[in-house]
Length: 209
Length: 209
DNA sequence: CATCATACTATACACTAGTGTCGTTTTTAT
DNA sequence: ATAAAAACGACACTAGTGTATAGTATGATG
Image (cartoon, rainbow over all chains, first blue to last red; front, side, top):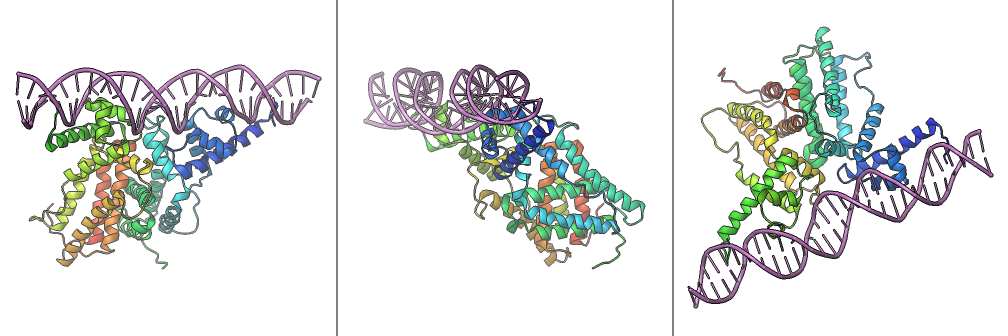
């Protein structure tokens, strides 16, 4: 099906391939996945796959970009609830995310950034770095906003609190992936985080519970 | 150098090989390391290396065991200082450990437990699981001891506090490995942890600062 | 001192699993 | 009908694995 084909066609085909790749990466991780596996999943030939992606690293990056694009920014919509509620909700949502960790790219992602040839430079421009910074900044801004509106009284710099949260969540995520959620008691740990945050940012709690 | 050789000799030779392997794993991680690399580093032939280890997974496990054996248990020596001081010191020591992360097996270790064929079962008997449990239990016991002696008044279960600490440290460690310590401001994050811990376990602080 | 068991070397080998390329075939818009 | 290009799949190549062989060096033993 293809002569002087539309850009639209190629775009759709590419997304089809990316989704197949995504599925395989979620199932097998990055290291164990070969181009052949993706061909099998997508039911295309070697030549076709290589006409869309140069190599496995490139393929993975495309999957990542696709994934990022789908993700809504948690913190953008400023609604009626307090910032503390917003933060709390966000933290609590992690429980569900982590429970479904087998259906995410966490495993592949960690492997990729540890093992891929593509990732060498730890400089600021790396994709990984950008993602990290983007997330911390979102949290940081929320805390700063809360400080401005007198809702929060942070006891440590908002930047280090933001990074603290992210480090913890990253660790919890990976530990849970490796050990299973029976072992890591995700919910309890998140409760501890929330307690800590309460003390760290000292919100003027409009008690809703 | 070797006829009807002593057990002692073989033991030493094995350690020699393990140390060579360790060096390579630290430099290259697990995934990128081949048996050939270890042969080159240890300056032994293919046959020799394979007479000590069956394959690369086996080799890595031996390195891990060797490493564990060297590690002292942080919490065993009960000295003059308060438990809070002890915990604080332990947390602060992580700064130096994380700063030298390139000289540790963290990278190889994470890769191994994500990627190796050897690791399939996530059951309680797995090596990874044991290590995890061992560390959390050590922290947990310290908190419980402190509770018994009225030094601490934990605001959450000692178990979930212990796991919280470990998740955070694991996350900080891996993020710092991947992004560099300029980005993750290790010291600040550890300060945040200490602040949180103070609120979490509520120690009767015998102020030393 | 001669000898013999054996740790070790060095290299060849058969095998596996992947890579990226490229000439050929198929498809379909015009 | 035709030509552009999408899709195919054989191919040459690379990098590793684990085994096997013949030969060398060495130290304990009679």
